[in-house]
Length: 109
Image (cartoon, rainbow, N blue to C red):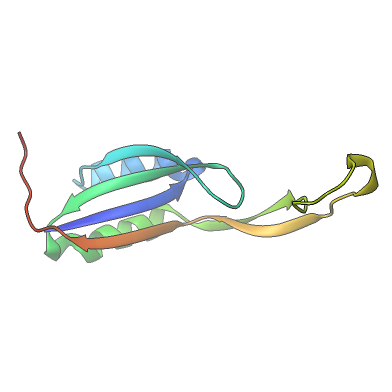
């Protein structure tokens, strides 16, 4: 058995959760926050048999696509607000990050 920990952008959560349920995957959803943009993320904990890992990863890939977004990034030492006008920077958001781990023991009570 494997545990797949998947971090996805908040905007993708409805699509991925519906798709996972349609494909028979059960999961636990945890709200989380990204570090760079400090935007909402969702972390999914998905227990799956080893033989189904590749199918699960493909479902996640098909449901969570990266996209570009413009953001204003202030430097950490920005002095008075009126002296610095940030210009928008293009960054990639969305997509998914998956960690696949072995599970030594699994029990449901």
